[in-house]
Structure formats: structure tokens, C-alpha cells
Image (tube, rainbow, N blue to C red; front, side, top):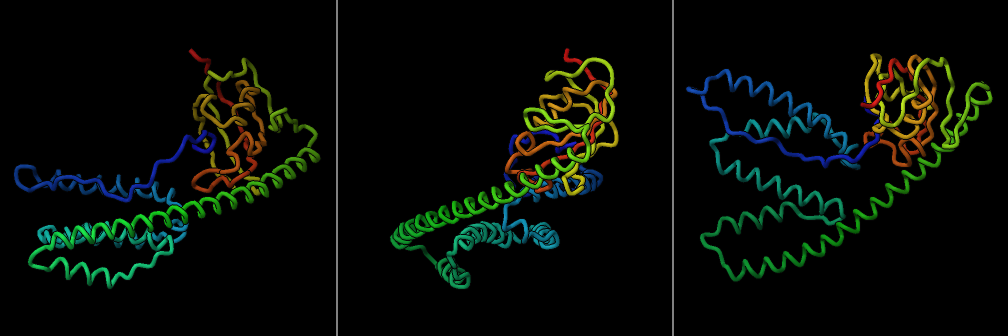
Length: 300
């Protein structure tokens, strides 16, 4: 169960691997190393599979899992005794991240020239400190200008993305309202509340109705108006009413033990104009839930 809960925010994607000291053979034993290889690989694999869903566009559409594994394998399988190579790999990855940010902002950096200048400076027998300080000052001025361009591009991208979300939200909100109106015309048993929630009582149970502090055990299926199932629970799950989206909580407050309802939740009391970060619920989407309450658990 996940889509009926309100989202408080998402963590930033951290494209880095957990570090650990290598397990040496001998007194430690090979079994420990074998176990670490299994569980570190499995845990990290699952964690990153989940984190990549939060990568922003355009990286999300360009992200390929095969390429990710290729880069991961080349790094992990590197010869750890070749210290110079490992340091070069680390510095190269850092520079690559900076260059990627510059590329996104329309600042083209000649990578061949960068490598040529780096190699010439790196291979000198001694460092000219005056030249180094002068060049550092010049680079700082250049990077300040680049940062301004990066911020401008990011702001423009955010504005464009927000405008697109608002456009989608408007279209989806209108489509959702039309869909609910059609359902109400076809079925006089569908009622609406002041908040905009529409519902149909399939079966009314018995006992006390839950309040905001109570917990409930429910089975449910959540769909978009085109029939796409975005979330469901075949077995009853328990949760508190104060942790779900407003429209779902409002519907549950009318349902006692044994009740079965169909809820039509507009975006205003659902996931709003932004939808969910993973895109399973679009901006402005109207949600349709089939809900059955198996038990109401009063707050202690």
C-alpha cells in the first residue's frame, strides 16, 4: 500500500555506493566475504532500483539500466592495486559531473582540450605557484559566470516543467469531472459531498464510524478514470486515517465495519496538480477507489 498516503517529500538521488573495508582472507574467513558480496549486492541493487525513479528529466528518459550496470561494473572490477588508476577514476568522475552540469546549461567544454591541458600541467616537474594562483582566479571568475547560466537554465526548466504540469492538471481535472458526471447520470446512487468527493454505497456495515484518530483495516483497489490500476491490496491492511489523502480519509469516515464503497476522489482532495513523483498518478488526476472496511480500531 502506498498511493493513498500523503507524500511529505522525496529524498535526493545519491549516485554513490556505500563504502566498506575489504574483508581480508585468513582470520576473518571467506564465509563473511561471501555473505557480504550477496547482501551488499542485493540491498544496494534494490535501493538504487527504487532511487532511479526519482531522477529528474531529462535524465530519467535517457537513463538505461544496462549502461548503469556497465559503469558500475567497470568501477567495482577495477584493479585496486593500481592506485594511480583509482585516483584518476575518482577525479574523472568528479570532473564528468561538473561537465555534465555545464552541458545541460548550453556551455560546451572541449574535453580533448581539457585533457590536454590537464596532462601537460600534471606532468610538469614543478608547479609555478604564481601561475597557479593567477589561473585559479581566472577559473573562479569563469565558473561564477557558468553558475549564473546554470541557475538561469534550471529556473527556465523548472518553469517549463511547472507550466506543463499545470496544463496536464487542467486537462485531467476537466476529464475527471466529466467522468464523474457521467457516472452520476448513469447511477443515481452516487452521491457527492461539499468537498467534491463522490461515493457509492455498495454495502453499509454496522458499528461505529472511524474518526480521524482511529485506525482501519481495509482492502482496496485504486484506479485512474481510464481503468489503470495504480495501487491495490488484496489482503486487508491497517493504517490510520490521519495518514492518508484527504478524500480517502473523508470516505472512510462514512464507512463502518463491513462497509464497501466506491470513492471518486478529485485532485483537490487527492494528489493535487503535481500528482506523484513516480508518475503513476498524473497531475490533476481523479482517482477511483473500491474500498472494503474489514475492521475499525478505536484510538487508545
